[in-house]
Image (cartoon, rainbow, N blue to C red; front, side, top):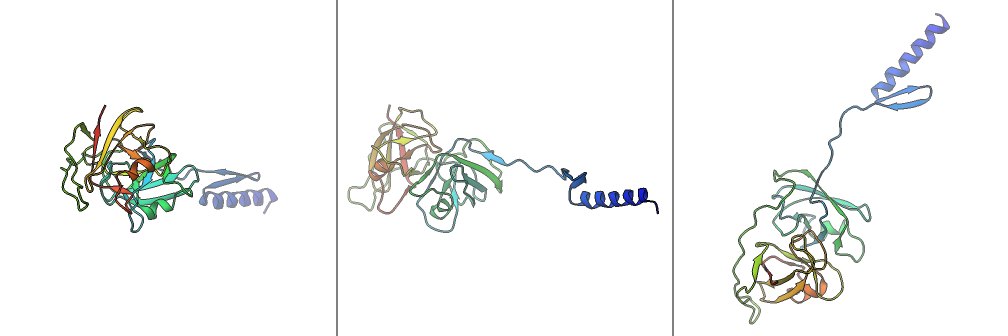
Length: 236
């Protein structure tokens, strides 16, 4: 067999073996061959902040945008940490992580992720934008706390059915919102204890209203970082 034919067979074998792994080897240069189109991630709720509900249990999330069973991947862009969770109930946010899920992506001492990427990775058939229909606002009822019955609403009730949580941020009582512009005054009433606070929106978030620590302390129940029965009123 001639030397020329041997070289041809050798090159053919190299090419066949290389193609099976998705690359061509020519002159010592590896040329990658596309073997399929990877699906682009379904990024949802762009610009949303992510916070925690304060609830226990295995990693999970609640959402006002996606139905129960939807799987969402949340990435903290400030530290590169990510977690994938399943929505198990409603809330007033695009995604609200419970304690176990938030611990997987949090930065030490922070209860808010301002630079987050949320991707829908399975389950659910809700559209990627817009919130699911909110439940009607629940009327105030007597609380177990003495004198805990909330007075009737005096302002325009907004974001009916929303839960309210805290951002973990310091400073004078204030709120952030993904619904109302900076300068809007909102009155938040915890219908489970009758406590209320009026705050001014000072920045954006992924919730109807997200209270900072000082504001949340005015309406919280001991040991809870989430108000499930809240009334939010726009008062200006």
